[in-house]
Length: 428
Length: 164
Image (cartoon, rainbow over all chains, first blue to last red; front, side):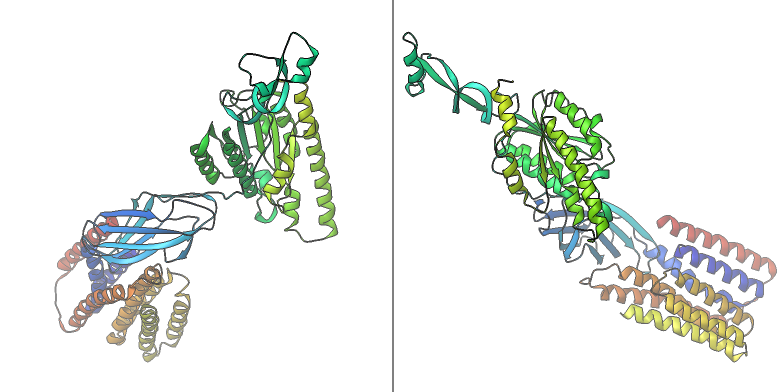
């Protein structure tokens, strides 16, 4: 109950009882309470007129890195006797100083204070400061959220992968590092064709030319170009959240970050889809700016209630048919049909799957029942991965206890033999 | 620390003064009830913020009953004032708890105690004066005073609530 109501009720009680009983002492008890209320009315705070400036030592950091937030608060209005300032930094952990300040602030006075925070991956909009002003007796309170500028991105830290060999069936026109299955200048031998004026002499294939008296033949090399790469990060809660509040999602984010970084560094056009709470696209693009956009999107990525991949549609204007898609997902058995549909739509698909069985086993007690259950689930998973591979999908099963870059280097530094065989057979 | 000490001392004093008044009049059961409540009030002080309002209500009621039964007025008024200070300090303490360690809330505490002292001092002075000043008026004037008092208080509470 409000303190004003308590005091008011007591005053009523005392005055009425005193007057009914004709006892001045009883009425007199109401006097301090009435004065108390009057003091609250007289010294109560007016409308808050505060100007707040916020500065951050860094606006984009890695998880766990300290960031110093400095706030400068100037009182442009009437003096504030009892002002509580609370900076809303939800989710961040304060490591030194405090995000609260209880002070008196005279008219025109400025307060500057700093505190240091750290946090987990995420986007933290620091868009207001909560100010609560009271009179000294604490009867009248005015609360306002003072808007401030500032935001903090805690970006996922990811290991750098050196080379990811992909073989999409369609590449873009710009030079890159992905074999385009088109003859021209390059490094890898592609074929032999009739000599054309302008061909360098060292391209001439003398052995082939010697067989024919009237013609000279030149070697042709495979052109290397950039490709469209779409990374799909699976943020479905039901498969990322495991028992006892453990989640494998941060590992998926790490993998997506690392892959995006690798593909962009090779000059490719990369886009990102986070399939969780909403279907959240980062439109495809090149270079450092795109890297920053993808990192910010991954910092914001959160789990959601989406169901199966079968409902997911990739817009062709973003990713033409035969583009390279990379799905990062712990996977569940119901995903098979959706992924095969992707494949049949013409996309080259790589699935990087953080192993939820190995991950969850770390947190479970060792017992016969647990190991039997794990064995059953692992067999189901192996079957699913095997079926995906047989459908022409490259699968990387990542045991999260191993460094991602090592696993990806071993699995994706060169295309699998079956994919090389398909491509050398002239498909595409 | 000063606030917490003041809070407990006032709670103790309030209970002791009013209970002493009742005990002096031979009202043993009521004294026992007041002491038990006072202990519960002290014990619940750090846990339930609403107990301060309950404490003030109970002690005010006890003081009024005591005055109506002609128990010693200094004890009743003193007990009520201590309960009132405890009620105020309880709220102030909950506010100070929100401050960070490096805040200078000593100055704020000083200012608060100064203003509270001023309010209590004036209030106590008026309460003492009523012991010596006797004004007689007829029923119509008493009724008019009641109406004026109710209206004035309603306006005051209304204004304060709007300002909240």
